Length: 280
Image (cartoon, rainbow, N blue to C red; front, side):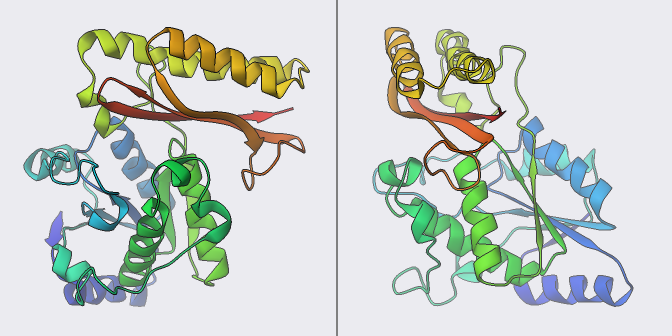
């Protein structure tokens, strides 16, 4: 399990693989790995001959007042977890390696249609930071496939859109959300939940599941479903940023057969996001 910190060495290694006819998959992460991340790596190994895992806490996707400085950095534990799966290469760059010209004035990638809604509305600039760093990582690694979790649904759509618009020759694969037995989606920020809050946190998935079932049964009173779920979550102690039923392909109005219900809500110090895709 090779570790590399420099782009030049990374490219040399991947170039050799491609020259040998090997396919390459990339799993980008910010570290603090949990079972959900490891599932991405396992699936990557099924899809490609060689797997690169990147570990980089990207400063440009944190907005003012967020937890960049305190975001858990657990590189030694992460390497131990990865040893059990054995990806071929771990890319652990410094900020200066990813942003050699500095963060000010850096070229940015913006996906306008998806940037300012839902999570983007509450975290202005977040998705520009995500789109920019993912574009950089795809250009650095030049993988055949890159894998991302479905839990960050809006992020997944942003990445699929930028790859299409910028003609980047990579297949983006969304991987099913890994959950605890309660239904709570695994997240690095779940560690901010107290034991009591963690029990309550499962209510978010339950609320979305209830909406999904109602829609499958034929309900089209989306505003009522949304309002009832928000009221329920607020009663349980959540502070809901949004909860909405939308078109699954572009987060537009909920038309067509493929829908998604997605939400973001605070519980204590933890901002939780989740979604369920619905086929009517």
